[in-house]
Image 1 (spheres, helix red, strand yellow):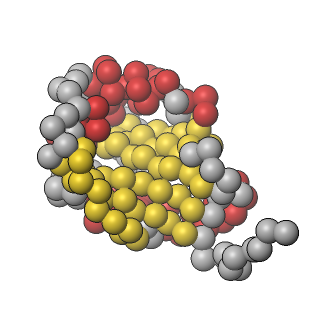
Image 2 (cartoon, rainbow, N blue to C red):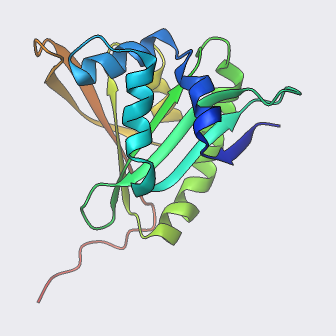
Length: 174
């Protein structure tokens, strides 16, 4: 069985040291420079104390191989969070990622309600061959395409959002 375990530096480094090539490219595009897995790990680690949720996801082998990291952080806006997932080979871990997506889709409404989160945003490089589909499988919907990423501004990212199905509508301020 795939396990979602609390974040640990040691297990996370297994993921960062062999990121899926497209996840690594996406991370470089966000930064605008070529970068090592160590720098990506350091960026991820620097946000650890501010996360609502931080997990390392392991496979079902005897070794419990870490294959992905998942983080959810507040954005500073009431009820709004941002999500990120980085993984090792999407091809090798395809069934595992499918399982994770279904689990997120199933458990996200309850978790978000418990945390007071009504909206979760996630961005992905528009040319990433699997990230956009993964987000849709998790229950996120494409909101817009955002050009202007990368050092030259030549790359487009997609903005996805999950909106709580429990929202009751707009509340007017007095």
